Length: 319
Image (cartoon, rainbow, N blue to C red; front, top):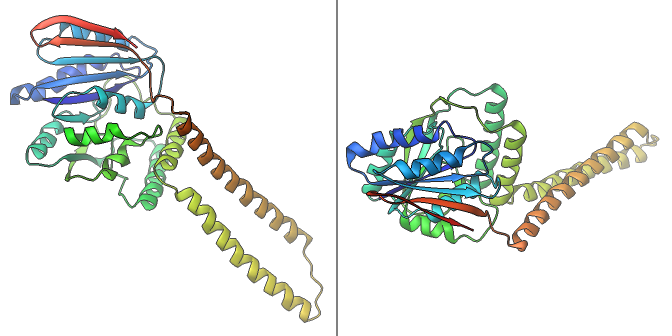
């Protein structure tokens, strides 16, 4: 069975459409599937739509998980994979910007023995210049720091059961699914897709949330910012040696040392470098603090689940 994890945040208009689109692609091929909707603290009626869908659908297993509040997409993906029961699991967006037709290509690659099938973007769709520029900068930074090409990467992936089992064993609280799936290793393949336009709703990512997501992802997966401090310190040390030699030469030739403005600028430069360095170190300490607390990645408030394909009863439990 193929389990498909669908993180949901204010997507009430896309939930049924996602089920219908996936069903229309998989059913003709005779691929049994379950949909694991993870309601990430939506403020609309998303979970009520999921509940109703689980009661009405008889040709697929529908699982709905509702968080007690918004915990973020990474937590939604992790929790969804933890509850998925299929032999192979896929993660895709509920807004269908990840085309369901690509699932067939991914499934075929899995049947050939590939354990991780990465969906990479052939085209990114319509994006404003600010978003596109920020995305390019973010992926360039994380690609350089990790050695993994990330620019065309996405959360659209298909993972074999053994890969999912290893992923959910990871104990870290701050996770980055897009990169960790590559870090796990295993036999992998790539399938290209074109990002589709939304039919309903708008993107839930603001510039502020993207910046927060980028910083969190980079610091959770790599220590490159810490290494940047060391490199900056070495460069400034070289600059200080050159400036010192220049001052000695000026003194030896009998010229008075001048430049009050230069001194102030140097102090400001050094002070800025120190404050930035302390900020980066402090951020990593904060991440360590979050890990040490050991709080759960999410709290599942309610679960709805269609009992079987031939039974319309719904099992519900609260956490």
